[in-house]
Image 1: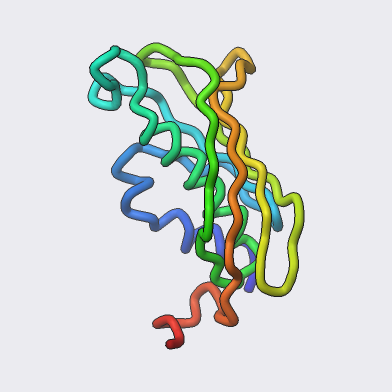
Image 2: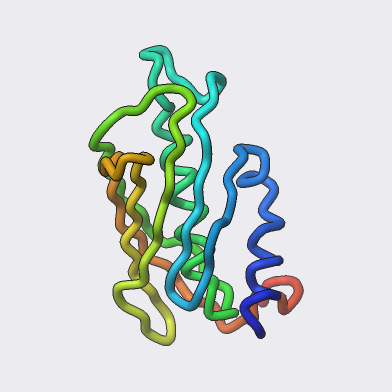
Length: 140
């Protein structure tokens, strides 16, 4: 499966689109996504809800881990929130493959602000199914 087909399928993610997440780059083992923090994404402290930051990292994670054209689903993600940003901030998440086997993959997920400040750092592990990305319904 070519990278354009993979990219198009990943860009159809309805939840990422709902949040305004933009997929900026995808290549085998790597993805970059971004979003602008909106008022409705804030928690009661007036800072971005952790779920928004996690969702941005997760969108990049999903794109990078599925970039080989094989269905990959998350097994575990651990995230550390390191800094807060204000509404209007533009955040970027980069997912980088650190280890890949036939059945699993390990990814580093970094969320940064426009000035390069590290906002969150995560690691995620996927299970790689024996199924092509656009291969129809999952096998039982």
